[in-house]
Amino acid sequence: DDSNAANYSGALEDPAFVEVFSNFWRNFAAHLSQYDSETTFFQLMNEPVFYDNPGAWVPILTEVAAAAREGAPEHTLIANTARWSSIETLVALTPLDDPNIIYDFHFYEPFPFTHQGATWSMDEVASLRDIPYPSSPETLAPFVERAFGDSQREMLLNYGEERWDRQAVADYLQPAFDWAREHGVRVINTEFGVHQPYAPAADRASWIQDTRETFEANGIGWAMW
Image 1 (cartoon, rainbow, N blue to C red):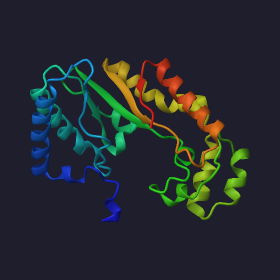
Image 2 (cartoon, rainbow, N blue to C red):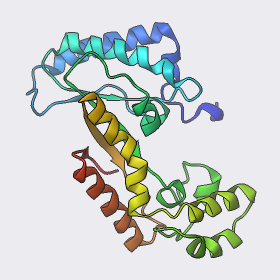
Image 3 (cartoon, helix red, strand yellow):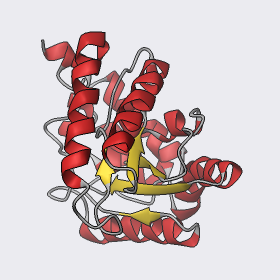
């Protein structure tokens, strides 16, 4: 079903499969527990979706984390939240009752810049080329004029008007930093980056630097996609 092609966690909407998945993690964590707990961490699920009901993932995450903890009492777990590990679902989460969990979120904003030319994404970004960063209405005006339809035109207009730059990146990420401090938990970003083939190289480097340095200034570990 193409409409669910990006719903990597669709099977987890079935309670019977949740039980299978939990048992898998209990056994897999027990197997991996032979490895050094200081260098081997377990990421329980990459980018769960549950788009229409992100809260449905929370009890599943809680159950799966508890199962992995049974198998590996000393190892660090990495927990992701719904809607492709978004900041919005991270900051809505009440941290689990387990002090040895690192909470993970992913970051690809602004999407017209980071995903330009990405054929696996929406048509509006798949056809984009040479989209600049930082953004302004002036720099985006030529691209708005060449937009192939209303939805792409609106997306590019918004990108220009939002004036994405280093400060805008920091402002977007700030809720994740605040959430981590409020709850006294550790947070990591294991995916951020820009699709390389069509992004201006210098702009891509600027976005990566702005994002990386913002993470580091706030004590957030990172891994780039």
